[in-house]
Image (cartoon, rainbow, N blue to C red; front, side):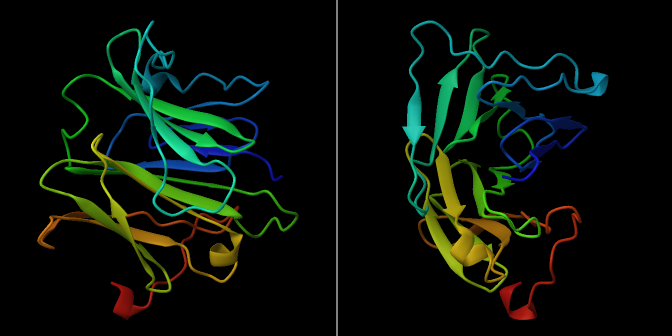
Length: 215
């Protein structure tokens, strides 16, 4: 497995296991908790990290991705001890990454919130072996289309918890089809919001060019 790197919207953390985490359309940082390791504290500009522990007797909801390779991928939501809504990605063999939102702030800037993550599990340090795109969508968005760089479109329903999710495996990524953008649509197909979720090769950070027909 390659060196684990966590990239935040503001600042950077390092930990073991998972590669890249990027929040699109939100300034809250992600906290990564891996088996047998503890992340460094975020830079002071982020303030104190959120308490990602579930509240006593909190309902923990699991949200399986609409498309994913085998292995037990899932995402979960719950309330923490401060009453904030927390969301976590459960990466098979790689721990969990979580972030929490104060009440009323989840859709403060956009009705479509997207997170992007990736990891290496093989020996090729120039390739990602998994990439996942997931997030939250506010009504009237009922489904989200994930467009890959080869123009493949994944249609991802928004569940009753407002969550959508997709995980891509090495077969797709090694063929050069990487996440490009998400599009939030109503039941009638009207576009409400869109965000780019560009992923660059390991170590470069530069996303590949996207054919004009995919835009």
